[in-house]
Image (tube, rainbow, N blue to C red; front, side, top):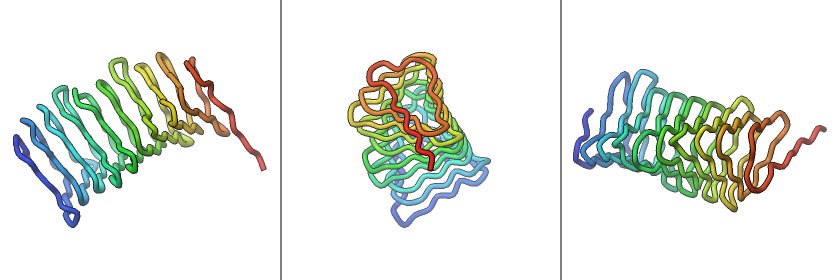
Length: 208
């Protein structure tokens, strides 16, 4: 399916199943989801040339989700969910924003190659989140729960702002910049390597 220069709206009662296919959005097109979108393991969903995605419904990616170098903003609105068990590549000029009341669940891989992943909601990670050299991640009154088996690798920059939370029972490997004005808590089994600027992590491990 090609969505170029127009607006595609999936209503709250609607379902879009991409099975072994390709959905491309370009030329400033808007893809708005209030219902259900499923991108299966053999499928691709692409934003390019200033195209945008606004999701207040349910978006499931088991395949590949790409924002190319010219891709526009991605907004996960309040009540919206994004479940990723595939690969999500943030490589566009637009910002990837998860608003307050939204939830991202990742058991696959999220690559922040460029621009910003801005989290004001909740992210549950049991997979891999990697912030590359030209990429950035910030918690803006948001919460990142890096679960057992989850990895956050930083070769770009991560900023945990005030009133924001990172709970870590997996692995955080900081190879560049990690700034904490909020709270970082290391639970049992959680590891954090590399320097933390600002508030230092708190270790919390209760054995009953």
